Amino acid sequence: MTNLKLKLVHLYPLFLNIYGDIGNVKVLQNRCEWRGIELEIQQLNVGDKLESGTDIFFIGGGQDRQQVEVSHELQKLKNLLTEEYNNNAVFLGICGGYQLMGEYYQPHDADRLEGISILDAYTEAGSTRFIGNVSAEIDYISEKNTLVGFENHSGLTYLRGDTTPMARVIVGNGNNGIDKTEGARSKNAFGTYLHGSFLPKNPHFADYMIKLALQKKYNDDIELEPLDDSIELKAHESVLNKAY
Ligand code: GLN
Image (cartoon, rainbow, N blue to C red; front, side):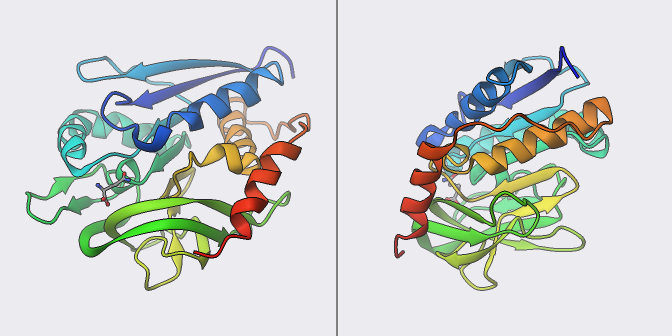
């Protein structure tokens, strides 16, 4: 198929973009462009209008105080975002953004922050801050069965219902340092604690997201032209071999 187009909305980049999480959007943009897929990107900030028909949503991480503002703003978009989730739009939330994709995030000494509940999960602030490299295992991407990244969070996330882990921890803490789960998935919505930013070291996951978005938009299993990922995979392996 030619003239493939996708639309990505980057939610609240002025508030949630800690540790360069915008790098994830740049990876999706490059990997689409290198294949001749037009990726329209909208940065949605406070007060901006969100139209329906988005294929990919991205939301980055941030400190508790930035999450307060975004939690409030997200409630205004909850119905439309839920509709898009039900229409199989692809979501990727990193850390603080991930936490707000669940039911709520309860910080240490502040009111509970309501999420949008597209992931059946909840987060409560823990007493330890998890900081370090994470490697994790997946079984749904044939090209590669590992994901790597850097975690820095005190929130402890617990999954419920039919929301499944995005990956299983090999090294690091992941969702809560107890149940060996990392991140979450429900339909095409993904959340993860992996900063880094995440996608540059996990090109196979970026392509998986693009394929899901094309499937959703064109109702066709479109194969992506392979790219030379030798540098990206060197970066992947460098983290995979690091102890925590
Ligand atoms: N403020 C949240 C926490 O500490 C998220 C942090 C982040 O996005 N890195 O758990």
